[in-house]
Amino acid sequence: MKSTWTWLGDHLALDFVNTVVCPDGTTRQELWDGPEAMEEWLEAEPESLPAPAAVSADDVGGLRRLRDHALELLDAAVREQELPGDSVEAINAAVVAAGTARVLTHRTRSSTVVTTSTDPLRELRGHLAAAVVDLLGREDLANLARCGAPGCGQYYHRSRPNQRWCSPGCGNRARVDRHRHRRLNGEQ
Image (tube, rainbow, N blue to C red; front, side, top):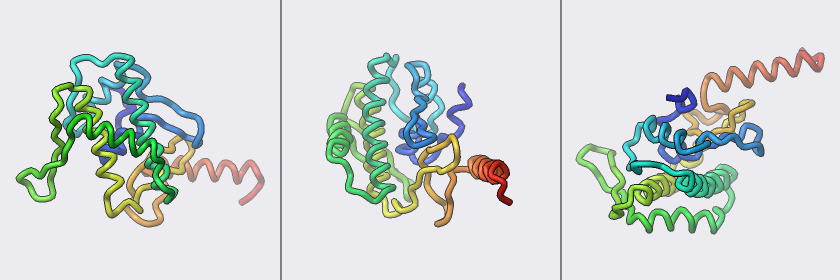
């Protein structure tokens, strides 16, 4: 299994959108670079998700497009802008097409997503889209941030108000980079 998936385990919507990395805000590094990578991600994802028996290149492309809509929504939310209508429609359409609903389980503060779809790919799309709806509807949305460390750019939840990086590793990388730039520019 790829070490690429070590960050999985946050909110499912963040695990979903972080399958593409935009380290400088513009250049994209695709982690779902084909069916094998998506199957590895599905296997590594801690949340139980419906998985198609086989994933085709077209399936990957469709899920990437859905993910890109989710990225646009999270980016707008982080910037505190109005959510783009076409992305709202795409996410809502995936939820509706799968007949997705969030229901309570018997444990306190626990819920699960169910769908009426019998198509595993449509069901997967519905689960992922429902996670985006859940994340964007949360009261703690102000804690959503994008990592500012060089080479990262992933989304995460802040655990404290002044947190700027998604992980200690990213914080160390950012400090080393800042120190290197200061030395190159003759600053102390």
